[in-house]
Image (cartoon, rainbow, N blue to C red; front, side, top):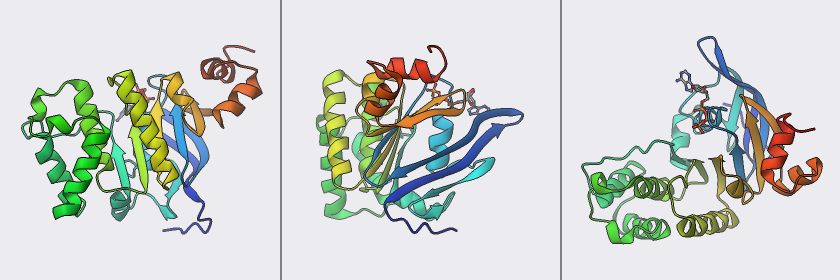
Length: 246
Ligand SMILES: Nc1ncnc2c1ncn2[C@@H]1O[C@H](COP(=O)(O)OP(=O)(O)OP(=O)(O)O)[C@@H](O)[C@H]1O
């Protein structure tokens, strides 16, 4: 275990590669994310975003390089209590109600009694599901399942939120309110790492890492990335860094 002395850094990724058999999916990724930052990984389908955030969440291991989160070298099991991870595919008990799912995951994180119920109320309100607490998850739409997964990731007030495509299938109004709450959480000190392939969401991040074919092709604030490439939009900037436009 290595200890990072710079307390303003939440995440350090150093020379990370990941292969599956002979297929190299991520190549030599190096980046830092500061505490309180909303950092977005932007890239097309199959570019390696999920593979990278799984390693940042400590549930997969790099083939080369190292990752430190909150000053601790990953993977490190006790770190799970400080992370809220929302996977791309929902890990929910569909035969149970939303409330029972929240109670189960809450208890895994050591939440009980009034604290658990206050957190359940907050999280379910945030994702607009308060009315559906008692409903079996099997009857939820895809978007509702995503929202419940997000509520579960938030439940234990994690220091770091790692969200893999959190707003897929969620309507624009709710998406907007989820993003404003993510900004509020970041103001309160939470670090948020999010993947997206939606360009207007990328614009809402403080900084972005653009990923293409397993490589980090650019990193910076949305404004810097646009300015440096003379682009009007993040999409144009992405195309520029990806070599499609000169
Ligand atoms: N367990 C695995 N075994 C083999 N190949 C894998 C495995 N997991 C991911 N890959 C491959 O790694 C590449 C990157 O996948 P990944 O899911 O990280 O991309 P992504 O950017 O998250 O895409 P999407 O937005 O579609 O989820 C893909 O080519 C995928 O097929």
